Image (cartoon, rainbow, N blue to C red; front, side, top):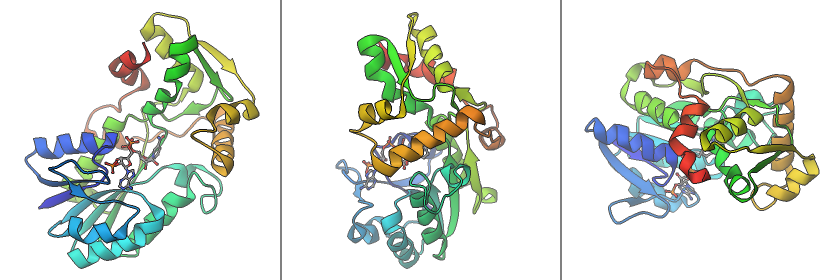
Length: 272
Ligand SMILES: NC(=O)c1ccc[n+]([C@@H]2O[C@H](COP(=O)([O-])OP(=O)(O)OC[C@H]3O[C@@H](n4cnc5c(N)ncnc54)[C@H](OP(=O)(O)O)[C@@H]3O)[C@@H](O)[C@H]2O)c1
């Protein structure tokens, strides 16, 4: 079998590729900006799909709603039997997933892929532990993290765990067609995450509670408009009700899910 792995530069794809090549599985590595030994697959350009999919039996795919139907068609033409799509558990955690910008594109991509003939396995991770990288500049510059909802308890999932589950879904036929919510082992507040970074650095990190407007101004290079409002609402809700925790990572990987403290231990140097 040949597995097409899209998005080669991504953290999840990179982890998945280590598992697949370690197991001796034939891979085709695709990227929107391919290295010489990689295949061009630009999810924004369906004209790149057919060549990348030729001779492939399974695919690991980053969700991209606008071209998901084109991808399903191209995969069907190529005879692909199984697509594992990286979605988001926002599809199940927000109240209005059809319209909420944190969920709607993922739901649309899942639906379009399922309309094709290939079996579709859906990975729905929660908030990545690596989202803490967004605090890197503030920690380095002023030893502070500015948060609108510091008590929001998120489901911090390690991208390495998502990659490992992706590997199992591609190699264990019993998982084909599953829909898997992937979280860390416990809900941890954003303030507790900052404290974990503080402890690992051996330096005090101040957590400042800021207003929604202050946060929107500080983040407007990356997140704007309806998406910014949806993210704020998501955190606000998680201050009242912590994120739900799934056992899927430990059930499938056969070991506990990686907690945020371990992510910190592995990644602390970027915050120094
Ligand atoms: N952060 C969170 O809390 C969270 C939660 C749930 C779901 N997610 C989803 O998880 C994914 C991020 O995964 P990650 O951490 O592995 O990624 P990442 O490290 O942030 O890298 C971005 C990925 O997107 C791919 N990509 C970007 N433009 C592309 C294009 N035009 N065609 C093909 N691929 C393209 C990149 O691949 P190339 O550059 O190699 O093409 C790369 O794999 C996103 O889809 C995100 O929405 C994130």
